[in-house]
Length: 222
Image (cartoon, rainbow, N blue to C red; front, side):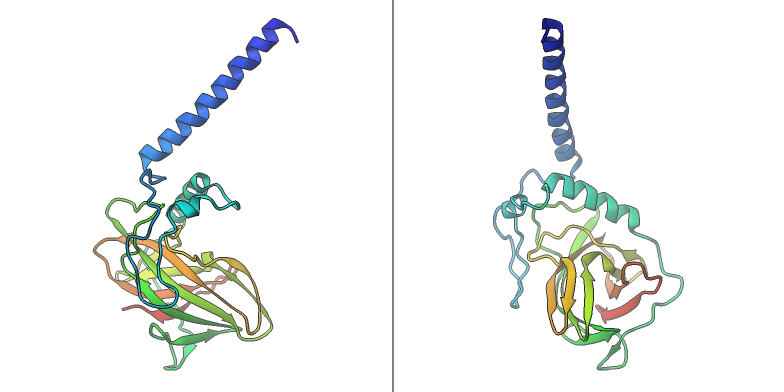
């Protein structure tokens, strides 16, 4: 390798390293990553699936880089959030013939859903909350009633008291609701998280299967 080529490669390496450091600094300053990153729970909730911020343990997951995950998921959630619903969603079939209360189960198709508890606000953790907003965490389970069904955290929506629909954001609570397949009678349980205005109330949890144009109100949160 000639001297000019070696010098060029060295300069390129320095530029790439400097660029990576600049991106990380900008992400911390812009609030995409919480620089404090607490390593312990700042609050506890009752129940057998208590909301516990994973803190530093979250950052050690091997399946995704937390910085990239935070940026992509927060941007996706913000872009997908839509305004007030013009027509009401149909309700599932629960013990009272419609959307059920927290702690009750509702069946929609081949899946049954139960909201076990709501953390409002969700305890702070690795992922920050946008200014003027609060986080609401919902502990939900999905059970396969028959056959094989899919489950996915991105299929849930939160409707607030003003009628606005909110999509998921990255939860600070663990375990989080994941995605995969269930064979009856298996269940998946975990925390969902949503960001909404600090002064607006909750109305309902909505489920909309991926690829489906129809959505169903499953649990009343008022």
